[in-house]
Amino acid sequence: MKQILNILPMFIFFIFYKFYDIFIASGSLIVISGLICIIHWILYNEIDKISLFSFLSVFFFGSLTIFFHNSQFIKWKITIIYIIFSLVLLISQFFTRKPMIQRFLEKDIKISNIYWRKINFIWSLFFLFCAILNIYIAYYFSETIWVNFKVFGFTSLTFFLILITSIYINCKISKNK
Image (tube, rainbow, N blue to C red; front, side, top):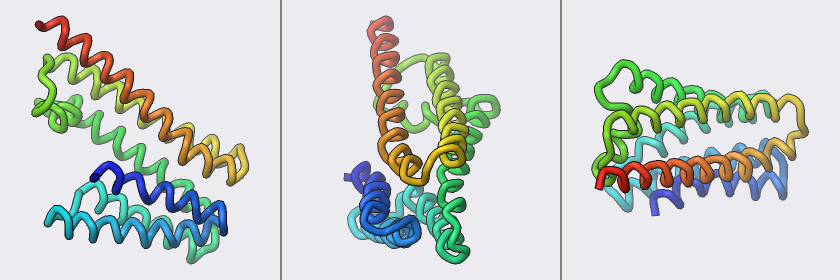
């Protein structure tokens, strides 16, 4: 349920963009992101940190997009988020005992710390790659292509890396048995 709530704003943005424009889509993204935080509070008696971070960034960049009537702000939102994710993973890679990915998944998955570090580093590079790719597509392609890629391209790339990561983890678990 939480995963559905976390991806719902992206699809609402896409639908509103297709029927209206980037500015109404940005407004709808702000509203749905706020509602997701409220729904998390109602269902789980807490506000999901990812949802809250997403809402705050959407509110900031979406409001700038609407206020200045300039779509570049909303286009930069995902780039900045990906850079933050990449930096957080890199910092945890080199300056903490456990990389961030391990902290999230170690309760369910038991593999060696060296493998967690490799996975963490790959995901950090992935987010950096996505940030650069987003800027490239935002500046060198049409807004429609950017929206389509934001929704379907990044989703596909993320699912692909999840699949690769899962296969890697399963291989490491099998070796340890």
